[in-house]
Length: 66
Image (cartoon, rainbow, N blue to C red):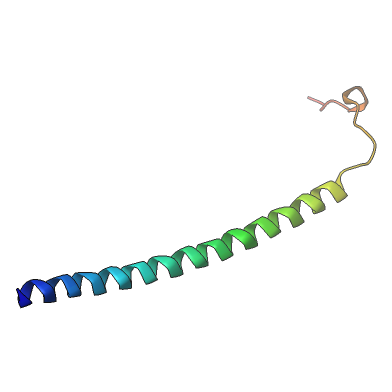
């Protein structure tokens, strides 16, 4: 009986360690996701700022010369 109890305690300890490791991983991944979302917002703003304010007309575009 005592051997079974020790085996259960060992498994529980390993499961707790695994859960802590998983929680740390999820936390770090969430931080990375949040940083990437901020970078996407910044890039969108940069792209919008670089675009001309007036709408483009494809008839005004000069075709390439062949």
